Image (cartoon, rainbow, N blue to C red; front, side):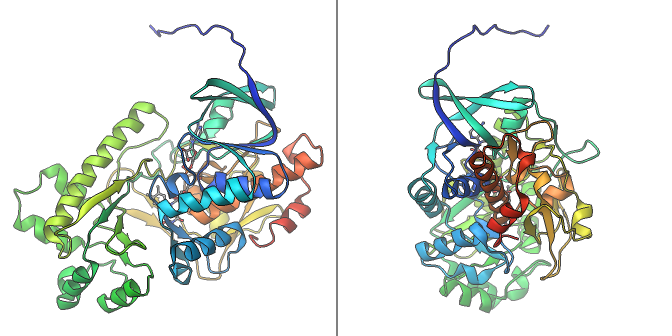
Amino acid sequence: MFDYVLVKEQKIPVVADVDVLIAGGGCAGVGAAIAAGRDGARTVLIERMFYLGGTMTGGLMSKIAIAPWNRGLAAELLERMDQYQGTAWMQSRPEVPVDPELAKLLLDKMVVDEAGVDVRFGTVVSDVIREGREIKAVIISNIKGLQAIRAKYFIDCTGDGQLGFLAGAAAMIGSDDGGLGSAPTLMFRIAHVDVDKFIDAQEKDEEEFKSARTRHSPQEMRERYHAHRYIFFVDYMPFIKRRLAENPAMFSGWEQQVLTTRGLIFINQPQDGVILVNSTRILKFRGNDDVELSSAMVAGRRQIETIFRFMKNFFPGFEQSIIMDTGSLLGIRESRRIEGDYVFTERDISASTRFWDAVVSNNGGIEIHSPTGFGLKGSHLGKDEFYHVPYRSIIARDFNNLFMAGRCFSANHPGLSAARNIAYCIALGQAAGSAGAQLAKNGKTNVREIDIGALQEKLGDVL
Ligand SMILES: Cc1cc2nc3c(=O)[nH]c(=O)nc-3n(C[C@H](O)[C@H](O)[C@H](O)COP(=O)(O)OP(=O)(O)OC[C@H]3O[C@@H](n4cnc5c(N)ncnc54)[C@H](O)[C@@H]3O)c2cc1C
């Protein structure tokens, strides 16, 4: 029988009454907060961790895909990051890394100091007060216990559609036929790597280290490394298979599977001798269950131990290396998405759809990471090809005052796989933040009363 406890009625103090409330301070939440704050809205951002950036910082997933022509807040943020950390990574567009720890410092400056947003860290959005199609308030939980915040507009930037879920909004999860979504990855960084020695070894015996996906020649790697430009080291699969065959007792069957599921993929960081590894893969994951989330973190750390052991033992230059840190957030590629007035799909990508209510333009291709094993299903768009994401995909179908931005926006499984990159999450957040500010300023009570022309003018650089 279903066991339960009864919660008694209680008075929860209302600690703020604002124009715009943003749940979640990942890159979408940051985009929404800066836009709403700059547009003059009284804005609160609720974040369960004690830093901004979400997957991009705490998840250590800090290589940002941004088309060369895409401007807006994402480009502004990356340009400031490059200056701040003394790199020339904007030259590497369409892929620009940021240092996750420095990004936390810069995001505090941009969101709290410059945009004047009231950020509540260590605070979880845990419930919603709803009347019909309106959200009246959210209940938050933090060191003071339960509190309530009222707002005119709410933006779900939790990545997992948690605010929408708590409010009872219709949501999608996994693939469109009821299957699983893309697999997540727990990222980690390694320090004390002699990168020059690693490149030397590749120069001496290019064949030994080559794989079908090798991106840079050793000479190019060296030039980029010394110019503080980023290098995509990928994926060393034949090398791994040879070492495993020569040392069959060194790794268990499970560990061998870990090492050959994705190969070894990593990039350099601004600090000399530090690399960031994107090589774990958690299989058969949905992302809406606390027990599953907990065991995914444990499995991710187990995989990290195996991967690190291989690299330290077999990669020249890794002899003195140590694990520097592991993600404090799991890198979730997809979980719940809230259903909007429009569901963005792969058809919009292949047709390069131009929407009358466009709020973001994107040129990311489909990228589905196999939920059950090795493999990536994908497509690429040409350098000048792009499609739009419409305003209707960031407003919740079941509500008058709820937006969602970032990886929980209204998209089906392949649609999300293309439009979940960091720059586009920032841009979706920026659109929702600006829209909320405009509506609140004009005394409107429904997201559908937006002056779309004025919003698009404001987002000009993004479109
Ligand atoms: C392994 C991996 C590789 C990737 N590779 C790339 C790449 O190379 N380039 C690229 O551009 N993109 C990449 N992406 C995609 C990109 O990183 C994510 O799609 C993007 O960062 C998601 O941002 P978000 O703000 O929507 O969500 P998140 O980053 O998940 O942020 C959500 C935030 O909400 C907070 N939160 C959640 N629930 C609550 C709650 N109830 N109360 C308070 N706070 C809450 C979380 O703590 C978090 O800070 C990758 C993603 C992964 C996982």
